[in-house]
Image (cartoon, rainbow, N blue to C red):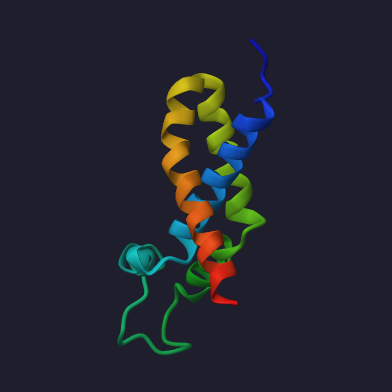
Length: 109
């Protein structure tokens, strides 16, 4: 057994990692949990909060494909190292969804 995925597994893991990143960082379905994590309150005003730096740092990390994307990719690869077959089974629907989103973006143009 090797610690490097085949090109097909690599492709599926990459698409699944991208879709996971988009889901966590940008999709509206997780807006409420993101707002809770960042402690965003509708009544909050700039400069009123001692946790402003906390929000900024977490928000920057969560929405950065270089930052959060690295850790999400590392988690997918680590899961594949521990449970290769199960990880690929979970990655497939996310990869298919990522391809669907890509096709939709191309169709919009």
